[in-house]
Image 1 (tube, rainbow, N blue to C red):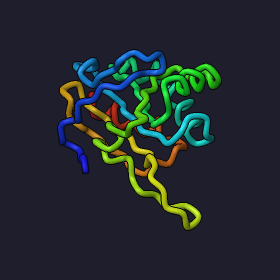
Image 2: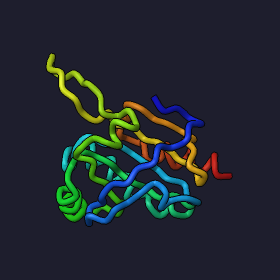
Image 3: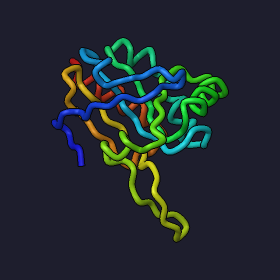
Length: 155
């Protein structure tokens, strides 16, 4: 299980336009790497909209926001267009990065067990170290909380 202070694990995944996006591309910048279950669901839409609404504030703090889910690049593309999102979404249908970051887990709902994404966020510093980790994230106010921690850490 990754913790604060650990080195972020390298990855390369396709974005919503099928462009390869890798951790190394963001060297020298802060990275908000958030994992979410599914495009076009209410909680995931709210989370993506909150991060989009705060994108300019994050950019002023030298930070980039990346969302990751098991959905396809095509699904991400239509999600972004449909909801007017301004962030980059990465596709991990094989669960490679989801597994690496420990967010693909056994979940239980209504007495049913299944594997899925546990909503989580990792704040990675410009040197590639994890500076903050949020697990089992509650959507409301999360983007603001991440921004506040980033602001404190980057001062």
